[in-house]
Image (cartoon, rainbow, N blue to C red; front, side, top):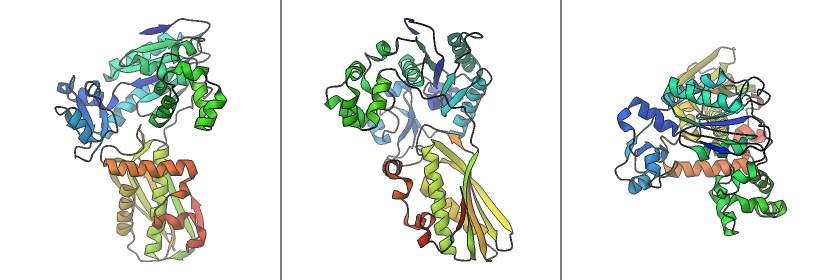
Length: 403
């Protein structure tokens, strides 16, 4: 455990992160895997690594790396496909343990949590309570979790990462800048490989250099992110812990002004709605395991059909299932007044897309498309079939849309 010297009274933001979560769950299920270089993800030569053990990381392997590269770095590694339903179950167990003991928490991903204990010091020692929660998680689930404690989310997250695996780190109020200063710039949240390379090309390798730079210079180089990165480097972060509530489903439907039997047009609209929902999933770091298609006939008879599928947030998988369900569902050949699609059985995840099944080429394509959508708007990149959803002049089925 690390303790950074105390300067004044503590604020109470806790960050908790399960250690090598997917790997740890697999080791609980099969103890013989403990201590081995373990890779979880697509087993084919074109698959990618969804997660890896600490033993595998010593060979330079990391998540999202092409599986063929990981095999080359560590030929004797054990590779398994993974079980998202088991990971979701263990994540829910940890969530319940945290929810029972704290007044406010945010579940930022399937294995990561923020806890706000501000104002609780008169009732509990926040750091001791975090240690108790860590112990309870270990006893009740068998999983190791690390945590950091400080006055804000950024510093607590960095403290957690510095204490891994199975550790804890406290940064007292006033010690944020000295704690961050010796770290490399890529330890700061929001600084990815591209930004890190840009900073290093400027001779900025350590956070202490970032702390001393004029914020205007970073804004000129990095745009609007420059000021946020400067604040994080200086231990400043006013973002709140957002109360957690589990979203069970998301849906979209269209009621037409004129009833129709144009099957091709209906399927195009279905593609557009499904594509939009899939992007929304990835944007929120969520996966779905169930898709439902609904149609309402002109006589108001409403029918729906659903199917389960492996956890995913990929357009091509969900669109294919939506079309299959529509073909099975549309049997009466009557005029249709409404069509809809619903995604349910949602779980949080750290990955924007399903790393368990997709090839590196498909992952690169989705990441590129989502990057354009996030920067310029979701309408800038879409399938041709889905154009009718967002362009009324091209849509013969104008009407009310609910999302």
